[in-house]
Image (tube, rainbow, N blue to C red; front, side, top):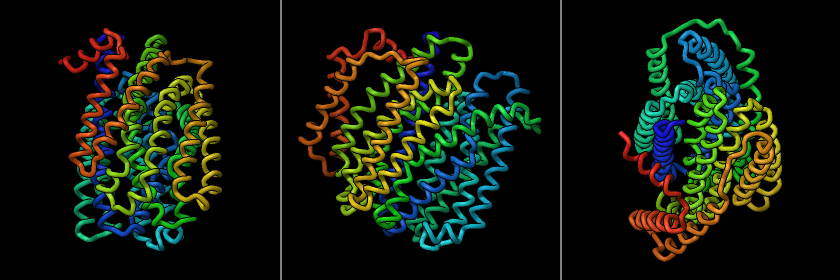
Length: 484
């Protein structure tokens, strides 16, 4: 890669990171609206809606969004792009309609199990599942064509719609149904915009469904992997709800969401790298692939490790401000455990790209299957006896195991080069942050903001004075912000 290409890649990752940060922040904004204006049981239903939609879309997408990225990234001829895109589009459309119809048919039973018999929640959720499946696929096109600015604008637009529509309906007294309708409205708006943007750009074509066997062979093995990933990330809400009730889900989820913020730093890796790495790998630029992976790992850890320390010690004051004192007192210990698991997952995400390049999607399926079984069994055993905190520890255990397994699997292929002495420097620099937070002892948002600002400044200075960056890296980082 040329210097300008490197700068462009980092800028794209930075833009995606900022976008995902703002998206995560939009969820934080909604926390006080939801937790203070609806009952804790209804908030538990809200969490279950998100968990259920996430699980069902994983199954219904057949791995096609990621397949689209892998096969479309290196194409340039319009006819080939149209054939690949619309072959997958129509398959995804049919599957999404089928799955949504099943939810309508069995809405009564689903509502009885998850939502206290409220059928309307399931009816709205069925439509939401269809829309989210199609949106995930359409976003795959933007990923494949590396249209990062367009992706960022659309996601920010969606976040604004979510915040305004959900807040308006909930504050108007519409309760959980209003929150769900607001979520559906924002997703439906993005669905129409994405279809318009893509059809305007590439046109329309009835596909011949060529190479569909190759697409499904690549995509379907990712379903067990993604589903197992979902089991590790989200099935604990079901287990908590079954054994402890929906109120406990409401106590657990805010702390989990706060710790999960670290995932915003791995989001650029997951969004941008597949297309970029596939392009270089298919052109046999192996050294560039290694360089991108190594730098991605380095910069991820530089940001993610201090964030783990910061979130862990700011958890209780943040939750007290954003939710209720009761939720904060019962859920603040969830945050540091989940944050550490999220940090491990970000490292996993970088190593996983090596498996994807080799088209060995079954490997990731096996890894996550093992992690999912471990997580589910431990949740069933521990949650009834140790409560919601045990769910966080089982998630951490599964992420740690998955990371260990994928590092072992990728050692035979490409291995990111990394200076492990840098980890010690990052850990040393980050270890100062809890002392700063404890000395300030923030109780309100201005003090929390002040704590974060001081931590960022001191952490950056310690990294600089411990020579964590080489001179050419500092020059490169400066060029990122100065390039026109």
